Length: 313
Image 1 (cartoon, rainbow, N blue to C red):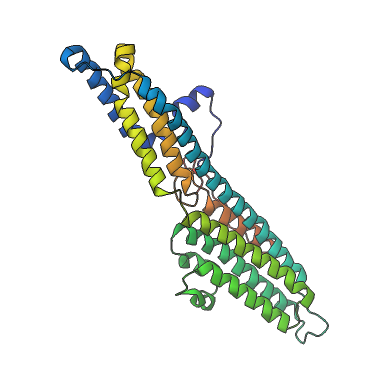
Image 2 (image 1 turned 180 degrees about the vertical axis):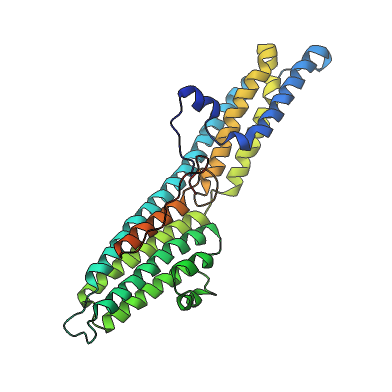
């Protein structure tokens, strides 16, 4: 995620944002076309043909509405993804607290060793940390096992190889660990539903993230917007030259920058779990959750990520 820096207003206008690197080529192309059209109108009168500004006024209003609708839809997806990962943070912390406070030897327990109970609690918390990182890799279509090998024992990692959905498999493993604690009478049966509710909440969070990832904005709508914006900006010089003359390239430059920029922003935030500068900082959130959970079980927390060139991973 791009982290906004506190610049002056002038510096923000001149240097802020990351959309320009995606649209500068198409913006300069349209501006070059407008320069060529303006010169040709002056040098070759027979080519002088104006289509007036009326078509651009008629198309510009619905185009702005459609671009706004598409960007609002893309931002809703982005914000829903952020809320889901915010819920993941809270649920992971709550589940860790439940594990550490509800898992304790009951009167019927045969093994009341504090070391054994703490080891079981730590194993469950480690599995939860692994789940958070596995979910990040799952949403980004990357390999989770190098990360899991750092967090979990080798025999536990081996359980998940070949799984189609590693995060769900890890949640199942946490449930089995809770069953094991119940069989050893390390947790009261009435407390099991409390932990199960947290596991269900994690499943719901993952389902919401998968829904966003697997259901993009309809492709035909995106293609239509790209085409209309390209045609609109490409033909704009033919409608402006008769009215504003040599100022046409300047006006086309600013109008095309605005339209292409809005179009590019919608593309960038449509899939919030990717690796673009404006996507969600899933690596940073995952590392923060790991630090919080390790601190609860008395382990050294990992170092949190710092922004690199203003971007959090």
